Length: 281
Ligand SMILES: N[C@@H](CCC(=O)N[C@@H](CS)C(=O)NCC(=O)O)C(=O)O
Image (cartoon, rainbow, N blue to C red; front, top):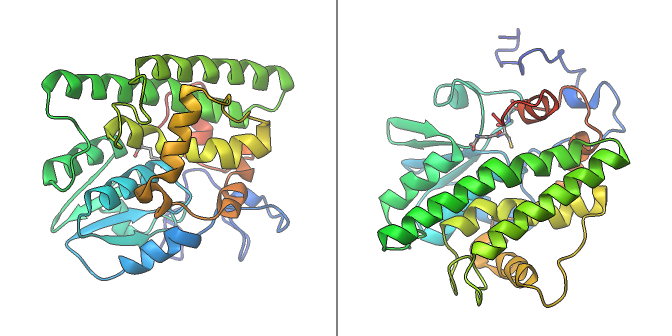
């Protein structure tokens, strides 16, 4: 605990007044945004009234984005509560002692981990994201596991890579892992299982959004090949109403990820895990 009653991020030094620890005392460095912008800001306003189901989230965070997309798609009643995840308010730590977002409170009960929360929302009802058929449900979980195990860690390794060689290797790896996913998807699409958004799409959507807004400007990640199945999928994700309503303006992502692109100290638990070769938190 620091003296102002908030938790600091592990070994992060105390921030200079007004600056975040990831800025390293340099006010010219960009940092993460603390409020959503654009359509996501409007959606946050529309869900600011108190509700028994509360999402504690940070606007830049892709793991939060998953839960927000699911809540919107399912049209469940909920409250969106923006938290500064690196200053860890007590209301977050009370739910998740690891101090990570997303965290969900439902009445007295609380839980965390985006993949677990997606399953919980599915159990609550609203428009389903998982198919009915048990074998399709198993496939949904299998390819969600592929996304979590193979695609997301490479996304961060690529973004944090500081040498051309490491960036080239990561770009090749990312392309390969996306190709495996695309091969497993319905040939006509545009989504994983066909015409509508599903569980697998929600698992990857926040990173698809960030490939265009973060990997492209910082690493030269290419647009999908014209006419490809991947292009069709990316366009469908970008156009999906629940995704659009929870996505901020491009600047928010560009600013919020500069610290990752520079592999700056004191950025996050994700950065530390990737640098040390550990699995993501
Ligand atoms: N495995 C977690 C990962 C969540 C996560 O890493 N969230 C980041 C923000 S994108 C966070 O809370 N970081 C806080 C920190 O690094 O202290 C999940 O799927 O929910």
